Image (spheres, one colour):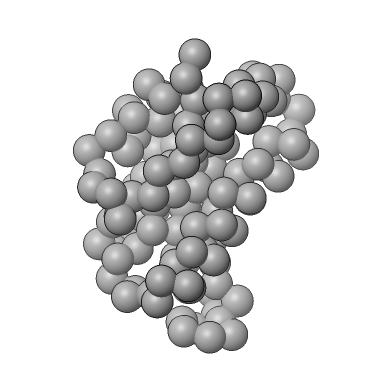
Length: 121
């Protein structure tokens, strides 16, 4: 089983490269923490596989908040670990701005069902 994690970020916010990197990191870490704090053995198995395989991550883009929320809700409805990142508002965007979504780590085929049609950021 190949596992991966996908981070979906909003292109419409026009974040600087450093700010984008921080939001992507937040999404990745939040998903892992969600798994570690859960009682979901399947998620923990996926996390272990992902770590063994080198922690594959892919950053994809969407053009709006509405589009981002669709991917988050689809991941949740499929039972995948998913994080919704809201910015603290200290630099480039207002407090509470939703910037990114993390999905997985989970089996690639499940993640691709949700995000397989998106373009790389």
